[in-house]
Image (cartoon, rainbow, N blue to C red):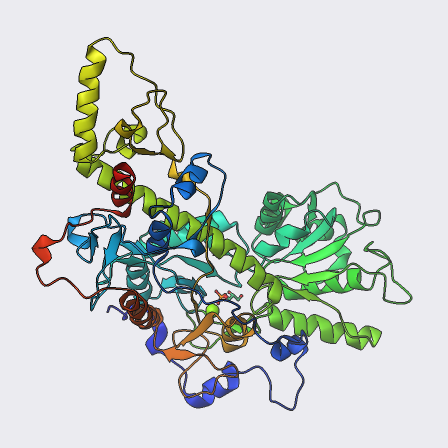
Length: 573
Ligand code: G3P
Ligand code: MG
């Protein structure tokens, strides 16, 4: 592994780490530890969740005689519950990955015991990654990350594709830009739908506040991010400084600053409804000066002072990381440190404890948001996989190369059906009118012709398919910061499995304040660990419901694909 370019070897000594890895001694109550997260009980699983791959569960749900389910699908808006799964069937991409299945004498798919599950499929488990200190370190990409992601994309000995998302406390730019950069660094396509930054859940505040002061990031990038979320009137500290330079006596606006300022705002008449700290401040002194003035103001108007200190706008932080990992040998102070500083100044001035609302890890709001994003992403991965597989099988059966129109590619026929079709064509030549097939999502082609047996299933537009997706069997969360990442994964739901890596904030030799379920050197080790662990669970479940393999495998009719099995079974009825 080519780790020479990365400074991860340049780790601090234990003594140095002890000073940087933890935030405060146990006798000092940290301002950042007041959200009650540590006393939460993670949600327990109410029902057993299968370790079989999602695609196998899906294929099982298509099993005959569930014609009812098929016809439900045909109207394109009914759910087919994966929980109703019967016998589980492989959806293999080609003959080489279908050997564990066959068609039983009753026409139903049969599963055989095996020592390895390695047909192409989509995992029932998933991953969520922290970014800084796990995937990247400042401008450097952690070298293990590329291979780890490749493995999750299916390049592993079990041929399993594992859905994954990223949950970073970082931000300051649009999710799309972060996705583009990650794609380039990792050499695979990452989409914005896979990215949650510290400020991403603040989208939900758009309907709540009209005038917001957005703090942090470079230039006016965070203004643009907030506008992209839909906020109407977005101001940044530079606008306030332009309005009245005396607000920040030790900072003079540069020409660059002036280019991005809003120049026509009178902040003595403008009410700031909320302060949203989106990203790390690039100018602590100036930003604190403005934030504190607004917090102590009357209704968020600059130049006013509340007598009660109860009238200022609320303040939200995109995260509370006290320190974070860059390519410098010691961790750097983050937004959590800014919170501590502002709260200390506020208390010194008002005698009151500053109330803040926090997003980012380890907060519950971000956890809920992450669950929603992950669910959508798992569904997308499953649907894409099913489309790929059905197209591949269609091409294989029709003898076509898959380059044709989507409808044709997805409308495949078994050899028996082709023969039937040929017969029918001959009939048509004799003058009988050919009926127009009706098409659905998974549609039993409906014909006015009474000879229904002539028609097979037409598979089309899987993107319209709505599945009742089961929850992930386990979500592996890989992070480098115990206080945010491990605490996040441990606190909210017991199906999340925390993994601590040593490429970021946490350094070997220190005792992490929040204990991970597993600790390893880097992200690649984390991925390998989870894939092996999950394969074991999947294998056990597979074999528990499987038959002993036949003595003479040649006598067994091989199953090409769950869908084809389905068709054959239906046709035989
Ligand atoms: O500012 C702290 C932030 O960069 C940490 O990011 O990816 O480690 O959550 P991450
Ligand atoms: Mg990190």
